[in-house]
Image 1 (cartoon, helix red, strand yellow):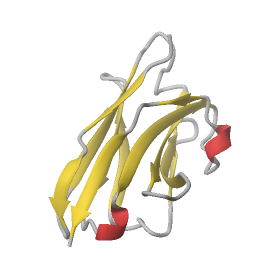
Image 2 (cartoon, helix red, strand yellow):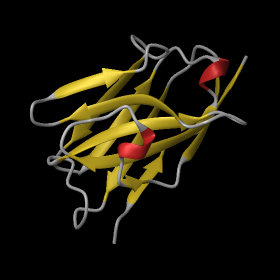
Image 3 (cartoon, rainbow, N blue to C red):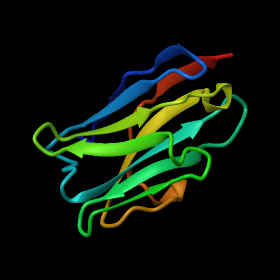
Length: 125
């Protein structure tokens, strides 16, 4: 059974920080073999790419809106991917979703096979 479980969302003031976690079920998604990504969906808008990570070769990619503020990383031993978010802005308010796909990362929502249930991030001004 496919399972990606996000956690770490919450309410934070502008300029604050949060770290989101995405724990993957090892029976279906091995973060060593899959590209992992974070997407977000602001209220009333479409889901959009935030950050992604590929393992072989190791590479990362970020949306322009979060470059320099967000960092994606992974812990192989825990089969977990993280999104460290610094300098949060009200426009970062959204439901954040973890996603996985075999091979290299993609910025396209439709390219991902597996999705978590989402975690809400709300940034107050």
